[in-house]
Amino acid sequence: MLHLILFSVFGLVCVAGAVNLLLQRHPINSALSLVVVMGALAVEYLLLGAEFVAAVQVIVYAGAIMVLFVFVIMLLNAGEEEHTHGSRVAWLLGLPGMLAVTVLICWGLIQDQTSSVRIGELPGHPADIAQLLFHQFLLPFEVTSILVLIAIMGAVVLAARPESVRETKREH
Amino acid sequence: MVPLSYYLVLSGILFACGVTGFLIKRNIISIFMSIELMLNGVNLSFVAFAAHWQQLSGQVFVFFVMVVAAAEAAVGLAIIIAVFRTRETLNIDQVNLLKL
Image 1 (cartoon, chains in turn green, orange):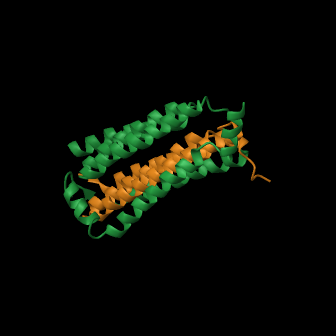
Image 2 (cartoon, chains in turn blue, brown; image 1 turned 30 degrees about the vertical axis):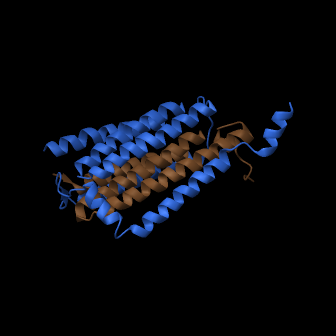
Image 3 (tube, chains in turn orange, cyan; image 1 turned 60 degrees about the vertical axis):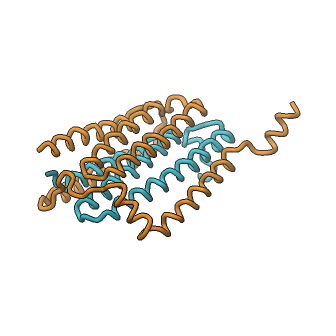
């Protein structure tokens, strides 16, 4: 029962944050509501027994990635979103269609009540995860390190000011 | 005891919010945040299935998704900075070079 109450409370916080992300016009407000969603999701992971994933969620997502977002929003001085009318077909067909698909999927999922998750049933201790990560998934793990290295280099190359601009600035 | 389907419904709602934001938002950074929301929704279903099938590999895959999301955020934000530098705008409607 406690599990269900905690799930409902933090699930509602999650959905409220996600809806707030859609409704806010200013990007910084959207970013802060995304932080709320990620924090609430970390609690959901804890309820599922995934301690390691919950910790990484807070450190990497709510910490590193969102700081990057907020930093870029401040750097670019992003203001209010401009109101523009998208295509009318998207509003007329897209939104009702998406709502219908969502309701259909949720209804189909709720029909199956046989399987349920108990609190702390599967211990996701960091030691167990590391055992799996450094034995069975060693090659993918090493590949991700190369991926991150390439991403860092790509970010530096893309965000760096082009040579020509730098030289014209110096001449002035 | 919480049914597995509740977790999947929550993850589906988060994913749907992400798709909606991707379609209706007009600011590049907001669109990018909607993509992160979709990734989070998928992660929740990964963890729920890991708990349901008693397989820790589901949590390992969440770890990989997070690594890819971090790399994607770094490169994507660098692209946003480059776009802002060349076109002086964050409005996606004004980035329309490829439009017919």
